[in-house]
Image (cartoon, rainbow, N blue to C red; front, side, top):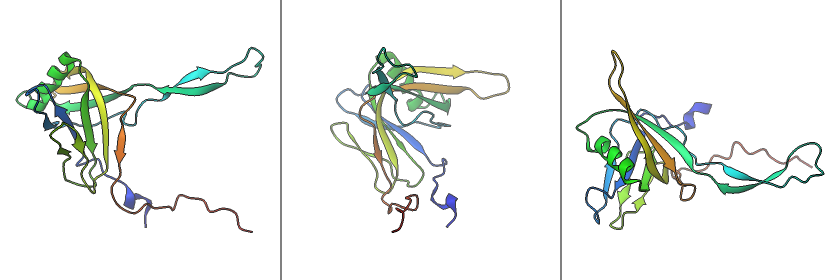
Length: 180
């Protein structure tokens, strides 16, 4: 089997969020129209708590602290008639944290929205679930180009969950222990 046989294409990846602004009390699942990328998935690094003593002469020492928030960038092709693009501006103005799910191309089913606003990841599709607020939503307008938007999301340090596609785990990366 070639190394690339287990990779996941970006084509077909979708980004969903739970809209709690338009109809308060009745959350709606929204798919962001025409994103062209998602940069920064994976969460923030832990802060560093210094454990360096005055007697240290070679270098500093530290322990990991709390995870920091992470910045995600979501560029998209702007379409002013699309509700998902209009909602990004309202979400920024609200300064609220929203629930998001990125679903990769190894499946096609969307997540399910429960009555209480929680998302259930689709079976057989790798998905990353997280909470974030829209820090900025900007438009870029240039000569001989379409109008492009970029939503900058601030991902909360807690709550990120990976839902792995249900296939068997390939243990080929494990190095066997030395023999007798």
